[in-house]
Length: 376
Length: 145
Image (cartoon, each protein chain N blue to C red):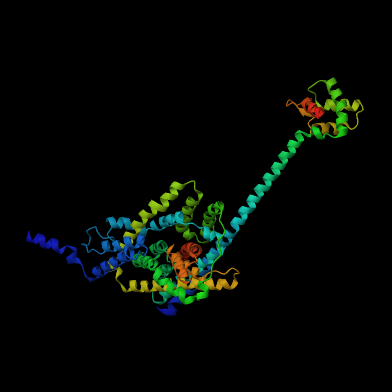
């Protein structure tokens, strides 16, 4: 009986844990705290944080419990991440949630979404320079797209072993947009520029909204066919929303479906950060490059908006360039917040949504391009 | 391999330059397409409106034609009396070639164009069996005005 008790105790988490598990559990608790108390992207951070707790409970190897052990519950659910099932489904939900009106009203603002993707390619170069192989460098670069599903999509294709750190870095930085972006935005703009008021966007007809997802899909996917799973679902979701006749499907896509997939994605991505896989020097490099990527993407958007102002008759507020880094709608909210600090009556949110949404499209195209290049 | 050497070895600069260019091209094309959509819709709507306007005016024309008994030219009115007598003699319904032939024999002036005018102003109408009849209703209406 004594042996039985000793054997049981030696198999408990207390006996199996090492300092790395404790570190990761603490990180998980911090992430839950940020989601709950600070409300930084709670829909993502709470599942990811709890997933980190799940993934870092030390368990006996080959017991069929860990996320990397085939046949375990977590391993089955993780299949959706490693085989690129969840990201397109999330895009379907995003499409069904998003109103493209402001972008359709002033399409020139889409260029800001393209400019922000400079961060992806700059970070790709940075990652190559510090010794990452090209496929991993591409996966790290995509963090700058500030789009969790896109980052997971590309990493699952190019560097599956880095899904954990890259996904956590992408989602953490997305959640930390209100902390990372404002200093860069203020640094690159003058007060006068931050006070610029933008003209009211024109009204967009229903016909335009219905035609756009079809035209957008055809155009983008003919240009970058590798973006098909992501953009196909995004535009399909938007068509469901706009055509009105399939309201039931649109409602499911923007509520139940996206919620279920977010739970599964968040928990498994969190659980994939097992200490022995996650706590490596590479992960530190990925986090550092991710922050760099985010900063460059934000700066590129703002600077490009200033360049556009040199040619535009109706000036745009350069702050909205920062919204080019996808992170829908967080970065648009940050633009609104920074703009209102200068002038509480200046409403930039709806204007910022245009580059914000085009950033989603841009980052998906960028991911498709990187995937194509790495597969050649 | 590290630094610039690694970037060059993996063609990093080429990938980045081409990559960002494609992203820009994609979004520029999309932005251009989007900026045209509402104009195309406007054009389409305009086309539809003008088509409907033309259709309406055609219908209006047809309506006026149906009461065109009020605007039958004087010379046709005069000729109609003679043709009516011929038709009464022939009996209804009658074939057009027979009316034409008979009017020629009777020496009526330009019978072909006159019969054509009758058909246009619906004084002579088809009976749906390949023959024609004299539109008495129209004639009554005309005489009442």
